[in-house]
Figure 1 (cartoon, rainbow, N blue to C red):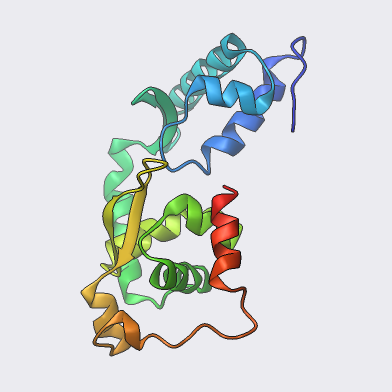
Figure 2: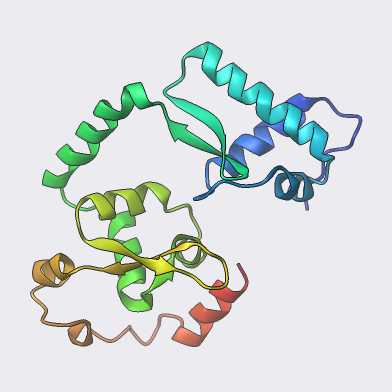
Length: 190
C-alpha cells in the first residue's frame, strides 16, 4: 500500500487524492482516503479543502465537493450545457471500443455495479457508464445490498438495437474468456 509519511508535505498527498477522486463513482469519506493513503485524517481534510479552494480559484470546469459524508469531483454547473451538448451529439457517433466492452460486461453480468464493471475491465468506466445511460442502452436497476452502489442493466432499446427479443438470445461467451466463476472471483475481490 502507498503510504505518505506523516512529516511529508501535502503536495505528496494531493496528487494521490486527485488520482483516487478521478475514479470514484460515489463520495468517499476522509477516513477511507486517510486509510488508503496511510496518513492522518486531519492531513487528508486539509488537503481536500486546499484542493477544493485551488479548483475554485483557478475557475476549473470541475469542482471538489463535500457531499453525503464524503468527497467527489463534479462538473461545475455553468459548464453543464457544454457537457450535455457533447454527450448528446455523441449519440450520432458509433460506440467506442471501451463502451462496447462495458456494455458487454453489463449485458452478461446484469444487474452489476459500476465498481464490478471497473474490476472486470481493469479501468475506470465512469464516463462510459454516463454515455451508455444517456444513450438509453443501460439503466439503473436498484442498489447492491452489500455495497449500496447503483446496479445497472441493459434496456429494451439495447435489445432493439441488437435485434434481440430477450437476453437469452445473446451469444454464449467464447470458450477462451474467463468463466463466470472467474468473473465472480474478480468482483468479490473488489
